[in-house]
Image (cartoon, rainbow over all chains, first blue to last red; front, side):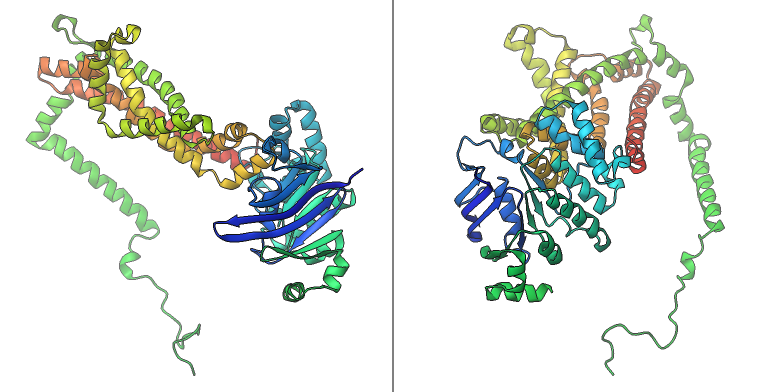
Length: 244
Length: 297
C-alpha cells in the first residue's frame, strides 16, 4: 500500500508579481512528522494554506491520498475535513464554550449526533487535562490552554493529518512547553503532521524530516540530524547559525 | 559628557505636584462641588418655570393637568381621539416593522456579502436597493408607497389600509439602514474566525450561521437598538397618509382646545415606549458581558 498522505509537487504560488513559493515539492507519509523551518516570510504559512486549499496555487500539483486536489470536481470543504489546521493565533470561537468549540466541526460538518460527539470531546479534553473547563468560554483560559484546545478541536474531526502553523509563536515563553509536550505526545502516537515552527530543539527531537524553506525555495530536506548537524547548503548553515 | 541625549536623572528632584487649580475638587471637595452644582441647576430650572411670567404660561400651555387628562381619555363629543388609544397603533406598527426589518435587513446584508456566483445579480440589486432607500427622504417614500401603490391595481397590494402602507414604507426604508448595520457587524468578525471554521470543513453557509453571525449580533445590538428607537419615533410619520396614531390625535386635540398638553402627553407616551427598550438592551449587553467574564455557560 502506498503510504503517501500528502504530496506537493513543484508548487508555485504568486501574490501579484511576487513568487512566494517557487517549485516546492514535499511529501508527507503516514505517521510521519515533517517540520518546516525558515525565516518569517519564507513561505511556510503559505505552503500550509495551499495544502488545505485556503489559497489556490499557480502551478504544480497537490495530492491527498493520490488524488489531485486541482480536479475541478474536488470539494474544498471535504478536503479540509481530512486535514486538521491549527493557527498561530488559536482562533477559538469566543462565543462558544470549550466543549462547543470542539463539537462544532463534527456536528455541523460531519453531521454526527451531538451526544456521541460530546463524549468524544470530553475524552479529548481529559487527555489534555482540561475536562474541568469544558463549560467555560475560551477567553477564561491561558494561551497555552487555548492552543491545546485548538489542537484538540482539529483532532475531533479525526483528520488524516494535522497542519500546524507556528502554533507556539503567539505564546508566553512559559506556556510553550505544554503545547510542545502535547505535539510530542501526538507524534509518538503516530499522528501525521506538517509543522511550521521556529522551535529548533523541538524539530530536532520530534521530526522525521526537516525541510528548510528560504525565500519560497525548498533548499534542503532530510532527517533532523543531517539538516541540523551537517547542512548541505550555505543558506541553511547561515539560518541555523542565526537562530542558535 | 553628552548632554540632551538618552535618559538621565536630573540633578534636583523634579516637581511632581499638579497646579493648585486642579487640586480644588479632589477628595471630599469633589463631593461638595457636585452637590452644589446639582442644587444650582435645579434652582435655575425651578426659577425659570415658576418665578418668571413666561414660565407660568409655559406651564399652562404644556403641563395643564385638565388637558393632560383629556388627552389621555379623549373627548368623543368634540371628535378628539385619545392619545393613549393612538399609541396602540404606533406600538403595533413598530412591533410588526421591527420583525420585518430584522429579517429583511439581514437578508439584504447576507446577499451583499456572500460570494456565490448564483447570487451575483441579487447582490447588485441589493446594493441598488440599499442606496436608493437610504437616499430618499422617508417623507417621500411614505407618500410614494401610500398614494402610489393603491393606484397600481396590483390586487391585494393596492387594496390595503393606510396603516399597512405605512408599515411597508417603514420596512423598506429601515431595512436599508439596518442592512448596513448588519453588514458592518458581519465584517467586524476577525478573518481568523472564518479561516478556522472553513478549516474544520464547515461550508460557507454553516460558517456564516454558526460562527460569523452569532459574533456579529453582539457587536450589532447597540447600533441596531439606535435604529429601532428611531423607528419607534418614525411610526408617527404614518399620520402623513391619514393614519390617526398618537401624534395625530395629539395634534387634533391641540387644535381643538388650543392647548399643547396634548403634545406633551403624546411625547410622554413615546418616552414610556423608548426608555424601557434602551434600558432593557443595556441590561442584555451587561448581562452578556458579565456572563462571559464569569466564564459560566
